[in-house]
Structure formats: C-alpha cells, structure tokens
Image (cartoon, rainbow, N blue to C red; front, side):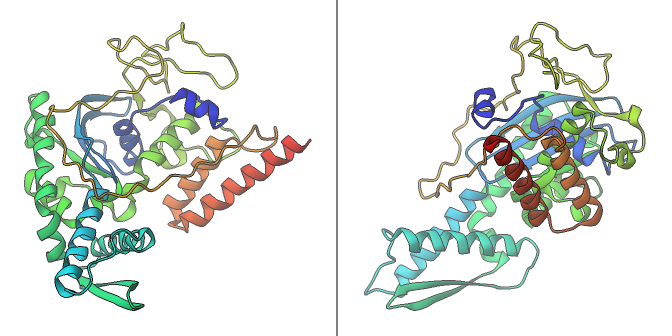
Length: 363
C-alpha cells in the first residue's frame, strides 16, 4: 500500500482501518451514551463486520470478520443472468448475445442502476437495453420483490458474520448500543430489515443525514485533517464540539509526521492525542489490520464484471496551495453541512490540484 501511494506521488501521513474511519465519521452524529458499536460495511466487492468500543477518547477494535467474496457486484451479476436467461426463454430463435461485450456491459450498467433505484423506491423500475435484436429495444422491469427473490438468500446469509463477530467477544445483540452502516450495498432495504430484526429498529442508525458510501472516506479525511493540523480552514471541532474529544485509536502504529522522515523507530504513545496505534502482534509499522474469516468459501461469481478504477497521480503542489487533506476535508465537511453536489465539488477540487501541480512541473 505504501508503494502504491508512492507511485501515485501521494504523501502518506498515516493509516486508519476502515471500521475506525467509519466510527470517526459517524461520531458527528453519535450520542455520548453510545459505547459499543457494530459496523456493517457492505460494499461492491466485500462484506466486513466490525465491533468497536467507542468513547470520546478512544476507538478500540474488538473483532473484525467478513466475506471477501460477497458484495453489490454479485447482485449485479445475479440480475444480469436473470435478464439474459429471460431473454433466451422469450426468444427461441435467437439467444442473448453473451459474446458482445458492449451489449453485456450495458446490461450490467442498467442492472446496477435499477438495483440502486430500488433501494429508495418500491415501485416497478424499467430496464431498457438497446440493439439486442434487430435494433429493437429490450424493455424489461424489475421490482423489489423480484430482487429479493434473486438476492435475498445471500443478503440474509450475511447475518452469520454478524453473529460470528459477536461470538468472538462473547457478546449478544443486547450488548450493542448502535449499528452503523457503511458501503453502498448497505442501502439495500433488506439489509436494514435483517439488522433491525436482530438488534431492534432503534439501534440501526438512520442514515438520512449521512451517506453510507462516504463513511470511510469522510472518517479518513477527518483523521488526515487532524494529523495535518490545518490552520486555514474552519476547525473540525466546530462540528465535533470539543477539540479535546478527538477520537484516538488504541492499536499501536507509527505515524509519519508531515515534515520529517519516517519515525518507524519512534512509536507514538497512548497518552498522546491524535495518534494511531497498531497492535503489538503485528510488529510492523504502518500496517492495517486485515479482516478475519471463518475459512468458509465465499460465493464467487464468474459472471461478475471487472470495472477498472482510474486514479489520478499528481505532483507536489505550490506552497500556497492547501494540502490534499485540507481539500478532502473541506469537500466532505461542506457536503455534510449543506448536502451540496458532491461530485461537482470533488471534481473542481481535484482539477485545482492537478492544475497547480502541472504548473509546478512546467516551471
């Protein structure tokens, strides 16, 4: 991970594991009586369940388990197979063109769009695929009931990871004060239902003021902001109320200071505020904790598409330019406060960084 960051010309100031980042993000809304939290992080490719102890001074990870082979991409693949098979049944003279990459990719995009739409609407959603048979559009429909018939068993099965995480620390559902949702797949209504059935509706945090997909990134941005000690922005504690209540993390990890070489031989202490510590059992600096598994095979899916992720590498910015942590923090803070257009704001911020870096390289 460090090498990847170097190749992208990013300055690594620290590492934070995902459940801790989610807890820091949701800390904006948590009440002071919340102590023990279950983080249900269900993304596009993996499921991670974490139990953490949270207070105004520390975030301690108690257990992390999960399925590295289950996520929203698998539900997309289920829908794609469903509609391709349905096309085959309704068109005996011609099968679905599974070898035509552009057609299949369009079907994937449509299935994802419809799946996400059903997370906020229980009405029937139209799916349209062009140029399948003599340029005639293939129009089909998907309802929440059909989605649950296709994917419900896999979603319901995620509760075994929740139970396993509780078993590791000898807890029951009654011991959990709050359930936090992270990752886009946690928006699926059936996910909320199984968690409410397990813990009670009042414990599953309502994310109407919070976007689960942004939980990890927002927590990391808050962490970077605090470590960078930015002075040219409104302090994060304007939202968190008290600069002395900054959540710190109790595993032992070395922090790479902003303006010095790596301090691998100088681990931070638990009494220092804003330090990220890593467990002694790892004995390696700057290494994130990996989720444990039950050694059970995941539900792999050969029909799942792989969509490349594009990263932008940038050089060092001018001295007067804000740090990347500053830009990220302000972007998310402004979004949380004003619920503005996140994509446009991020695009503008990234473009500003790229433009300034390009000017430096030209000089």
